[in-house]
Image (tube, rainbow, N blue to C red):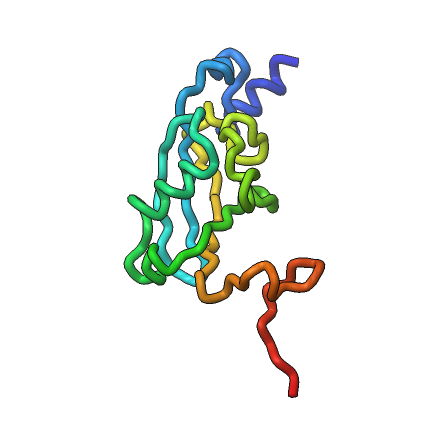
Length: 142
């Protein structure tokens, strides 16, 4: 049994004795990967941040100059582990510590990639222009 934990430690995994309790973690460290851009940045933020605070911090302090200007962004979509973090409206009021997919906040050796997809204001249609499923398609067939 001890051999299994020794193998895990040899592969770079921390054993239970080496890891602090998850409740003691105060920060989360992620790697931001911007869609359609070559920028990759690291970001650290308090674990008690709301998703909307993380998104605002990305736009205010970590936004690449090669992308559209922050004033042209309606909202950000964040993805980690194949799942969207937050979303629209009230979904962004979730606390980072409650999002299980985001990261293991106690493991700073491996950063969790978070893919950042901006939604431009020019793509957002007023509610009365969308169909019942909420499509953002603005195509006209003649």
